[in-house]
Length: 176
Ligand SMILES: [Zn+2]
Image (cartoon, rainbow, N blue to C red; front, side, top):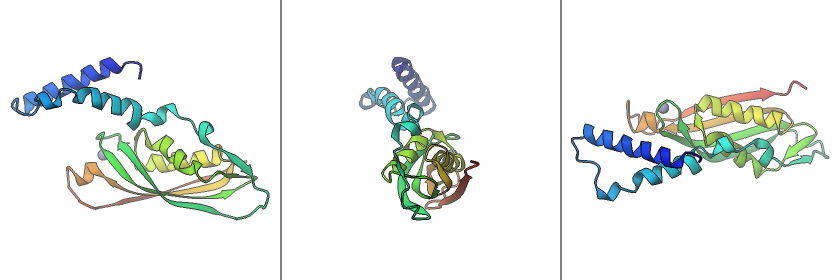
């Protein structure tokens, strides 16, 4: 991260402002290193998808057998950050695609999920981006992505609907 110090400084300021709101009781010595840790976490982990591109991870193999007709990798775990609340949502992604002249290396599908999950996201957009990337960069004829996720902005705050799950289905079709 280019502006690492600046981000760290801003997190420190944020904590100090929150502390004011909490009557000066929440921010003691034990948290002195927290702004540095949080800045590093945002810069190197939670948003690392912005520095990754599907072409860097995808490996295509000729679909010599013209078979199977459909390939599915299910229950790929993921973590992402809700762009409305900057709180995590997490769960499982299941990807189904119909190959064209190529098949994708199976281990690359979890990497594809990571590329789009490690960004500020909406569950709906995350599924669509993965499906579109499998068609565009994986040269698939079509792709379907189902995501089942728990949103901590719904379960840990607000309505506190503990354990509730959101399911989305996104599809993408090749126009070639
Ligand atoms: Zn949210």
